Length: 326
Ligand SMILES: [Zn+2]
Image (tube, rainbow, N blue to C red; front, side, top):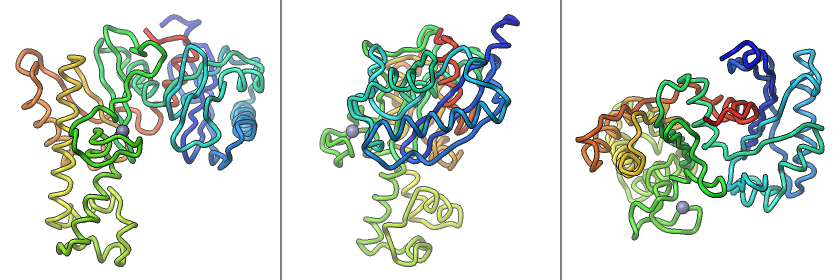
């Protein structure tokens, strides 16, 4: 990286279902100032764009900067995004974004060119550019939380697909007769291996009368079960919780095997809430992946936790703003 690149300043914005984060980021991926707000609960895109604009001004102001001090703006957003047109086609948890020309709306509000991309795709880019310093050329990043998302770097370049929608790995079909997915289809990876799947599977078993300390942990309200709670119960020796995490790890591993066969990555990074369970999940998932992947005998693949934590989509948005997608 030359001096001009290092001195570059961009504004990065990450719009999620519950919160929106923004940061002023330099060319080395350092966060100079940051802020966040609750994503407005609205179906009016103008309200959302106003909230993002206000947050952007606050973050710039905190660093004594103005919009003229940045070279570009990058936005990561949950949902299906047509990156050619800069349109958010659909975002399951952000009702204001439906066929919304987010790029042009934000560009007008901020007075600056804006680039927009999918949050998991950009998380892969952030991990690659600023977590790994492009140490590998073939990387798959997945985030396993309430749902499952992913991003791909192939041949030293962000892989975006024909309209920017590549990497929706959570909706690979793992079991054609599997449970219904929030997307309305059946047996998607997300319906079997996500935090939501883990919680629902656990609640069902307790409802059926299985003994577990989890019932007491939630005071009998099974709707309060989440992945973190199951993880805590597993650490305390609860047999059902341990079994549920093992089942989830198995399904995570099956999906990873498919990704290994498709992309032959040298590295798979796993982020998102479920990755915080750590080795109890990642170890068995990696073992299943290597056992089931057709190409695993030919090439080794390293599977480990992501490096940038919650900042990976934000730093990916910064990399996108800088045009560093290869
Ligand atoms: Zn699905």
